[in-house]
Length: 405
Image 1 (cartoon, helix red, strand yellow):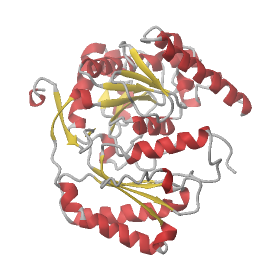
Image 2 (tube, rainbow, N blue to C red):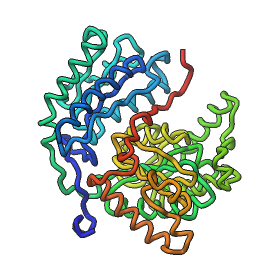
Image 3 (cartoon, rainbow, N blue to C red):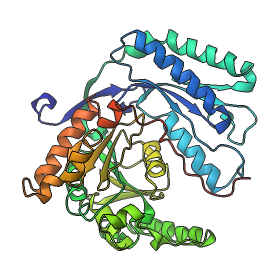
């Protein structure tokens, strides 16, 4: 920990607008599924070129493609949520340069994201305006390749921990989640907040039944009302779709020993630590107040994390009892195993073994300190297991709400 001057800093990338990155990627974002293959082929071409040369400060090109962006109502809640998600990734501090690419005729027009303020970090192009598939692939690839030197020019510098925002996430919970990995992550989250940083808890459908624990920690009544409204919206939304909030847990959760959504929710909330809840965000809404935030979103991990990263999370901490192989570019994702058996069975995917708590080797606080140190190391450039495996592009899943027309 000495290398971080008693843990007051991590080594990160400072952006011109003042935001702080933990990685230095080139982003290729499709506004619609119709431009998905184009962004994929551009990213492949750029990454192939990057392999030939050694640029220490470029983490690679990331293709963020998805299955939405059209066949939806042009206005309304679903479109707002989708736009916020694209917007959040577009300005994410882990990107040095971003290309937003559309087809040209879709609902999610690039003009929605191009505010005309010429930001030298963000370019907007349509396939139809550039003369088709090969034209745009060659044009953008060449542009990026010519900028390698410039993108590589940025160096990691000491950045205060107050610039870290961690996404708190769990997937594939078991009966140990609530006593090992989740409370240990809660301790690490508290520590980051004590240094002025932020954490985001999400998954509204997985705090259901335990929301009173968040209410007790709210700094005001408004936050409580926001969560109550979110839960009401969920009940209505699920009723329309012949489902209910207590249809969770999943088959894997049940095999892991969880019987009800209440058990699952109590464990899920424990990963948020004990600090005050300063704000409640809607899905992909930009984090505005530093500290512990709650963000509305589904329990499905890729969708939930996509929203947290769009809000500004530059590190993801993911607890798992069944074993998850999750990654989320551009933000590094750390996996916290709830048991030693799981850690040993999937060591290639697991970053931290919180099972040592159940074995009596360490207590929750000591494990929390260890997680905190690993978060700082990862923020400073040490690769997570999912990054080593190349996981994290296919997991970009914006939340689709409403009818596909």
